[in-house]
Image 1 (cartoon, one colour):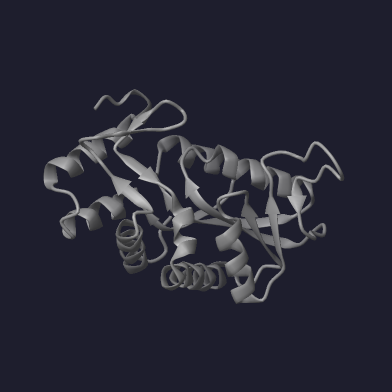
Image 2: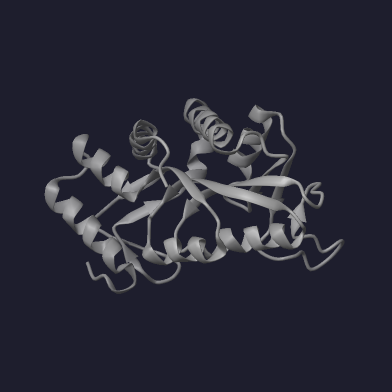
Length: 213
């Protein structure tokens, strides 16, 4: 869910500007899953641009406070969201933790790194939502530790139907600074892509697993 249309457009513009998101309808990328895709997103690049990372940090913080007030803890999904999650926690003067995909195989075998007490309210930070499986795995770990997870904030989502259903099934609210439709709209308005390329990108999202270039 987008909470602010202008923020969504501006975020999309910035992600395109620094090539955190690349659109190549004519020369698709191959994802680790084997999917062919006309889009590639790596939001970790944001951390290399102080002005843009501050923009993301401050808008995350503003929207979190508007939606939920101040939680007890900011938690990030490892590893992509650790950097930006830490910045948000610092900006809000809140404790920070992060959640591994699975418990460590040695030492204390932690899955959650950082101090988290049962009953504390938590807002989860993620960088990118595709199917939502890894993001929701982190939510499940937090809930099992006794946390009261208020919701999740991510920089960007592809908006796949499967991710929408996954979040609905776990009854977790997802809010993103920008999303696929605002990205395509902004890319067209700034002449990053033309009308034909926008059509290719929209067609891909209808069935990304079976899309053929």
